[in-house]
Image (cartoon, rainbow, N blue to C red):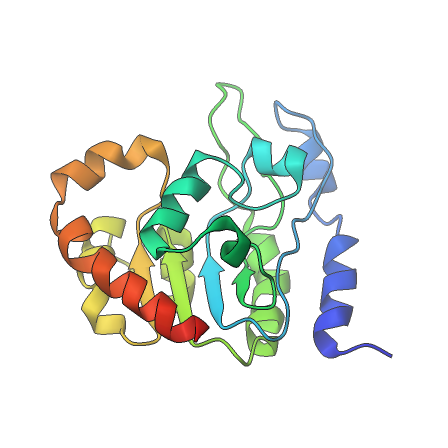
Length: 198
């Protein structure tokens, strides 16, 4: 007989509640929940949803965004992909697909409504939560501000949470426009990551 988290993992891997929704997208893909967490995890990364590359590979942040996020955190791939230490729990576990113009669709709300609270409640060892993007920040913090304002107020959420912009390379302009992020936020982020993992 497994633990509560084992049952959640099994149920989540078998989830098809968005099958019709995904079939109707431009990509017409099937659900493939990316399940990447263990009960012992000390850091929770709350992102948005897997992209097409992650959908195909089955590993979260297996792209240039992941390279940038690992750099921000000051850790290597081996540490990042150790599920016993780091849980990756996005707002939607499947790739949402593209719309008719080829843009990313938002994470379906039904995913977070169905899975998020039970998973977060089961992750009792988490010491630090990284909130990547507006969807995760809104759910966890109840914020109604934009990402820039929420990330700029990162000190308000220490020591247990740090809001971050998405590490997508499309946000390079945002990072250059907001130099306080690299100068002030990232050193504290790396310090808190190291503390949480030790």
